[in-house]
Image 1: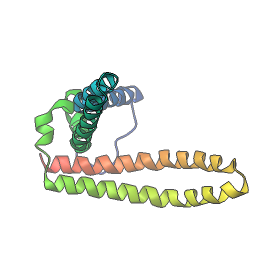
Image 2 (image 1 turned 90 degrees about the horizontal axis):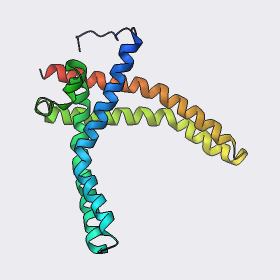
Image 3 (image 1 turned 60 degrees about the vertical axis):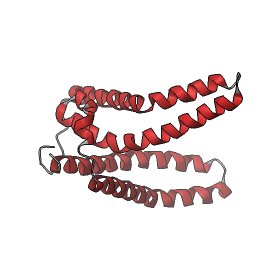
Image 4 (image 1 turned 45 degrees about the vertical axis):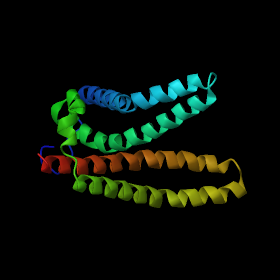
Amino acid sequence: MKGSNQLPEWENFGELFVKGILWAVGNFLLVLIFIIVPLLIVGGGVLYLSKNPNTGMILIGLGMLLMVLFILPLMFYLPLATVNFAKRGFLGFFEFVEVFNKFSLEYIILFIVVVIVISIISMVIQLPFVILKFLLIFANPKLPYIVDVVIAFINSFVGFFLGIFQYRVFAKYYKKKE
């Protein structure tokens, strides 16, 4: 956010830990805000199933449709809200007008490109291990579990750097839109 191309130093782990907890709480609250209405409708539909199955199924279907419609804006909102949190603190997550004002066709295209790039990198990295796992199934049914552990380790490592890449891209976009 400060315009530097270098990563910040990993000092003061206590403060970083607190910011991480605040980030997780902010993300959880945002997800809750965006999907509370669809969840209530689905819950009402489930409760209604025993009394009137048709109405219950309609409510569940409506709730699921609303869930999809609410999750799409949430997917686009979260990256910019995270950058706003980094800039303005915890309440930056909830500055809806400020964050939504940064939306544009450029942002949507950027978001889609980032998702595609991350997906391709992840698939290319995982493909050899998936092939190895498939081949090991025939040798010994227990060997693929070892590959699963290796894949989990690699995904954690690569995911960390892909996350840095992702938020770096969104932070640069955010800064450009200020």
